[in-house]
Image (cartoon, rainbow, N blue to C red):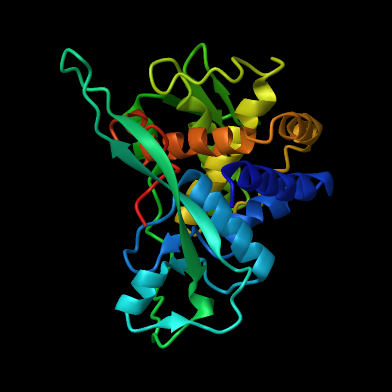
Length: 288
């Protein structure tokens, strides 16, 4: 499938969900069955690949968001079930092409390729053992301290102030649950990764800017990815006021969901301890 077709198909699916005015369902694609991961390696998929596996898991009703390539399935003693036509999911991977300039300088560049995976439900001959599919919760306060953003507790709303580089949150006891606290804190932390001293995102400088809806979509995607990674329900906030703006952006640029998921993946990588998430040209690409 051509990459342009993938962009349009993915964007159309997201638009369909948003047009129903149902952002929780959009976020639930991750939370229901956890973050997508490769069953053979145990590695979670990132960015766009996380989104693509979440879409397929939700759309096809799979019980587990776990995937294998055909070669991996064969090496584990399994094979594809009959009748899996139309259930192939194409993910993205980068490989670097070595190249030297005329003066010997390194001009190597990343080349985007695709690889096919299949949900474990479409593979037979393997005694799958899923165990716990959620990792131990990430200490968000520790992540905030590590990246150097200040967190101030108290008040009646959650927000990130970019000029002060400060997250404001209600007291932990004011949240209805620990999961609610995690989801809201994660959302504001994703915002804080866009500070000029970190990933320097420029989708929108502050609430009210024309492009701020783009930054909110990055924060929603990143928070949903973190929640899925750690088994936390992310059906907390609707941010319904952004739905119209998101629909406008997605309809005018079918690739923006790719850009947003890439930006969200970089933010998540930073919060999870990657000292230089920008060194990978796009964390949505990975090795099968």
